[in-house]
Image (tube, rainbow, N blue to C red; front, side):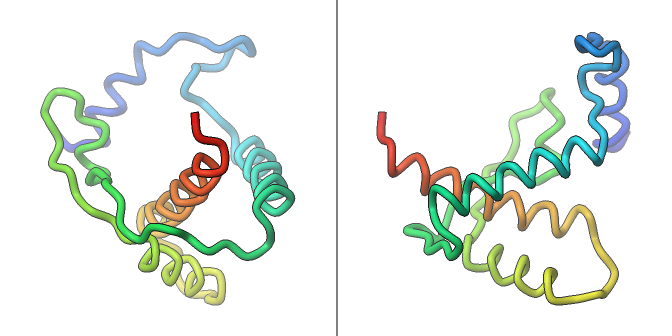
Length: 122
């Protein structure tokens, strides 16, 4: 059974949210609004150009991320590779690989979150 089927099987037992939809359901419009707000906050709080203090980070393979039945292998990601991929993607009209571009965008977003965390240590 592939990772998608394992993830789907788990989603059949999800609770419903306050709006009556399954709690794991979100619209593209909601995602767009959330990311617009996030990028506005990034621009206001961190500036319009971001320099990252670390280049490597820990990550998981996407297929293993949703299989809680086994211990995943920990991998290393690279912020500079993620930034280059996001930059190339934003300048291109080529085919969009949702998985590939999402993974690189997540790497950049995690680096942004780490940058903010460094501003406000606990």
